Amino acid sequence: MEHKMKKSQEKKSKKKIWLWIIGSLLALTLVFVGTAYYNVHKTMNKMNTPLLESTNTDDNNQKTVIKKDPFSVLLLGVDERENDNGRSDTMIVMTVNPEKKTMKMLSIPRDTRTDIVGNDTKDKINHAYAFGGVPMAMASVENLLDIPLDYYVFINMEGFLKMIDTLGGVTIQNDMELTYGSYHFPEGEVTLNGEEALIFTRIRYEDPRGDFGRQIRQRQVIEAILKKASTPTTLLKASDMLEVIGDNVRMNFTMKELIQLQGVYKKMDSEIEQLSFEEGSGTRIDNIWYYIPNEEELQNIQTELNEHLK
Image (tube, rainbow, N blue to C red; front, side, top):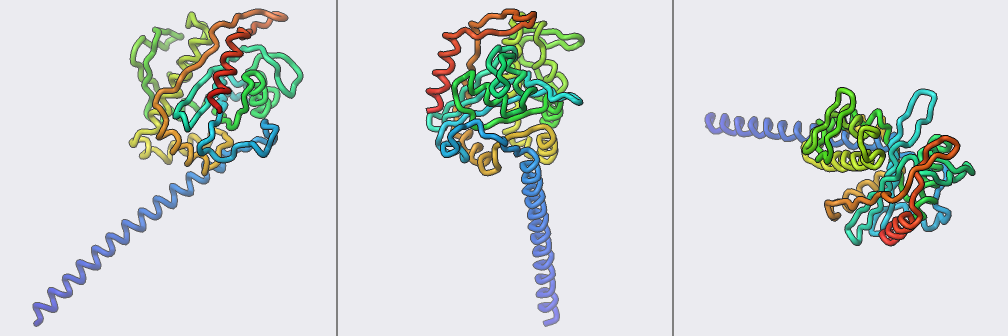
């Protein structure tokens, strides 16, 4: 009888231990999930910066939720300096068509001479951000390409290298051997840390293609970041990534839209179709160098982007 009672007590004791272990694991899980949820929302609140003035003249047609409708995004890479708004040296437009499961990406040459909407001037398009921030940059790109822009993503390029270091570097296929000072980038597969990637995307005069070669490298690095950020190992660095992103990225995507965007990308073709200006010419006006787009090529790009957004 005493032996049976002892056995029963041992069973109860073991059961309590297992319940305690399970309870502790659940508590830790809830704390982890709660912390992650809090950190994500904290980062989103930091990053989410709606435009004060919509660039879309018809508020009823303004997209607020990504679902099935095509949409467009302006990516601005800005070198911010002390007492200076900086210039958007990287201006990339992405159009996404969920129904067709396709994405297109267009790099705009930074020296493109165009109307700076809201400033009543013709100037280099990368000056639009310096004159009037994101709203003026978006309005000027909309005017140049004759398409509506629904979203923007602003990246501080100095913080860009921290993002890549947090990811553990990125690997790209370099199509041309390049040397910049003490930095050497051989042709072929190259793995870059943050500082190397920043130099790699800034090289201009050492590349015979000039700004066009730089645009190719910028797109390569952006695609490599997107690819690396979607790997399971990145989840282990989520907390560090959130901190870096929160300090260096601004956008007008909401949390709900980002969640929907993730679902959209899962169904997309992996390849992003690359568009570029290739037939324009350079000229000096008042001793300042500008890139002048070829009118026919510009119209073809406008038509292609508009068709993709239908």
